[in-house]
Amino acid sequence: MRIERIALYSNDSEVVNFNMVGPDSSNPYTIKGITGLDADEIVPRYYASGLVSGTKFNELALGPREVGVLIDLKPNYRLSQHPADLRGTLMKAIASSRSGKIQLRFIEGGVCWGAIEGFVIKFEAPVSARDTEVKFTIRCDDPIIRSLGVTSQNDLATLDKFDPVIIDPISTSPHGFKMKITFNDSVTPYTFSGQAGDWYLNIDYTFLSGDELYFSSEYGDKYLYVVRSAITTQLMDKLDPDSIWPMIFPGENVYHINTADYDYDEWYWYETHWGV
Image 1: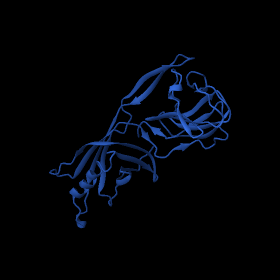
Image 2: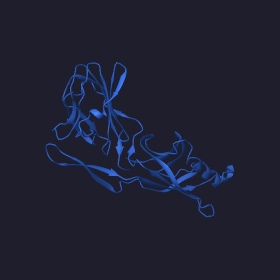
Image 3: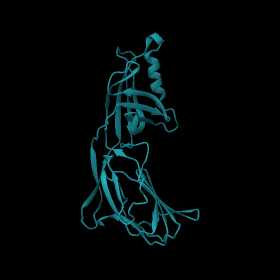
Image 4: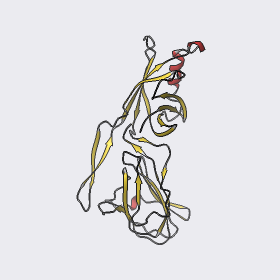
């Protein structure tokens, strides 16, 4: 993805934005450099082996990311604007909400295609220096760049029930997804697997007609529960011990489900990227 602008948000409000494709004389904040947005130190972590192929499954993961932003301050002295005023605007963004997090949004064509958030762990502003520069460092415990809006599988009515195919042509890294289905008959168990049967997620539970199954394999937001007659039952303890959470990989993903006695209600995800 290209970056035309980077916007700094705090408490869901834009603080400043930076033009990345050319000079902007009306903007008192100019990025002189930004580091930490590449895919640095991707670490493979073994978590299972294929039931059929015996292939070792590895989760490729980034460690916490530190993004360094170097900004040149260009105050408009004719409007009685001073470097201290511009520094103060940035400092106020460090902790303007109870979460303490700020967010960098990456924009192309006026559209935000991804964002990353974290904590400001360093703010350097040498007020005695001749150059009016500010450098701050953001620690992002979740290093993946994610879209702000969800991507939905819109053709649920035509999505195959036994062998659904999900295509994500935008993401550059694997990610989880959220799904909701409603059963129209009794099903025991419910098994979601890879097409070749190399892995599976098996729920050892008797679902009845009208049951609503809610599923999420999203990073930091995994859940599995059923709603029956307005009563919610958690199902994590019903998972087979060898179950593996389904993921969506860049490109085409083919799955297999052991029943067609259900209807899709929702299937959506957030697009993700290793870096920019």
